[in-house]
Image 1: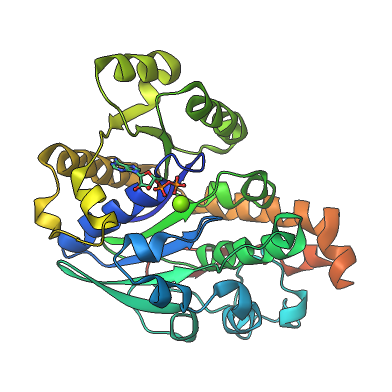
Image 2: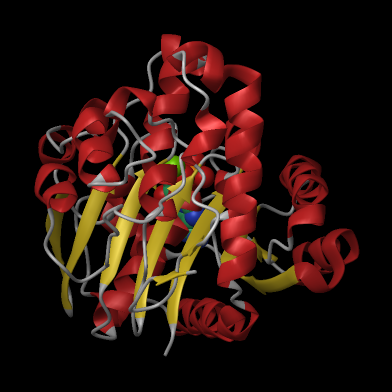
Length: 329
Ligand SMILES: Nc1ncnc2c1ncn2[C@@H]1O[C@H](COP(=O)(O)OP(=O)(O)O)[C@@H](O)[C@H]1O
Ligand SMILES: [Mg+2]
């Protein structure tokens, strides 16, 4: 049983979207079921997966369908009185509806679209474009919050993958989103700026058992590799060089995936193996505990006030998410 939630984070321009899209293509080419989620400030994952700009811009935005998402997920959970009192960190409990990668459900109907890739189709979900105002607080939170809610209600089954292209910002740290992944790939160019995002992430992640690996990108030679190795040590998983395949795709002439450069195929396989290897670190109890931790934090810092409810009461103490089935004490 291998099933994974994987995030790509990093500085803008480092190659998060490029590498997430290549990784999604790699999984699809291996015949594996994938939900790809674009939660990056610049919404480019659709285009990187081969959609035309207009198609990509026309994708349904999760951020605009929050009431539907909340209503579906809360199901008949008696601890959640209404969608209005459900915030991004509200944990599932008895009566909640859970999401599975492979099933059909109302959330996918509303928010996911199939994208055909060489090897098979994947589901693509997008938060929707962030506007200037979103970068303040509330709306940005709600857009990214839609992703967090879905991940918190997801029970992923055998050999299923959720890949999230994500901005490494303070918002994902405040909400707990950064703790929702089996592995986080931090994409870094061999520059001081690239590495400083890694340091900040590592610092936030330290107390939460986050598995963080650095993927060096736009690496041009041994000196670049040596630099990254010196800066991030054993956290450096693999490096990727300039890809003509990517360049051709961006010229609007996408080659078949099997023509991706050998070295880059190998790098993707390394990411895949690293993700699968984290499976034994899975700990649903810890996953639930962290969910509750961040929920209580958000409840007291703004949620209770905003909703006028005592959101701590939403926590179902006996509930633990689990694979295939749900255990209640
Ligand atoms: N390995 C690579 N080979 C060729 N071009 C790349 C590579 N990685 C990134 N790029 C290019 O760099 C630019 C920024 O990459 P992108 O994935 O959009 O970054 P991010 O999502 O982190 O902002 C894009 O034009 C992309 O095509
Ligand atoms: Mg991007």
